[in-house]
Amino acid sequence: MSEYKGRTQLLCAIAVSLWSAVAAGGQATGAGALSAPLRAHLQGERFDIVTSIRGLPLGVRNTLETLFGSGGLDIAEPGAEFQMTKGAVDPKLPTRRLAAAWCSTDHCFVYYERGGSAHTWHAALFHWTPAGTKLEGGGVAPAGLATTDAVRNLILTGATKAGSW
Image (cartoon, rainbow, N blue to C red; front, side, top):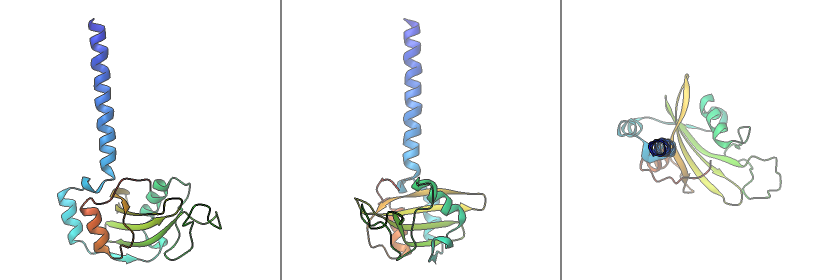
């Protein structure tokens, strides 16, 4: 009987650990996970527009590539052609297109559209330094956001939705 009880306790401990890891992982990309000091920092930070993928810090580009999971930085420049719909004319085109991006000395907001059978928009916040880059928050976003303030407010209020990048 005590062996059964020990196994049950061990399984419960493992389940709680896994649940905690899953919950923490889910929060890592949700805007609701932003701390109050980080939100205050972002509200007072000055962001400059980035007009090209190559204008983003290398760490941000590398992290986007990892998020996309496509084996490359699968994103077109603003206004360039991309696979807006599934079965696009040229399957060699990227499946995403940068709409706008803004960076400060240590953070970047990236807003882009993703084509395919369900055309979606995404917003992401990255913390970057020469030592490393981390996705702080973001997710599926509404179309038509045109300013830093609109994207910043979306992420700060937790209004993005979970979805694939």
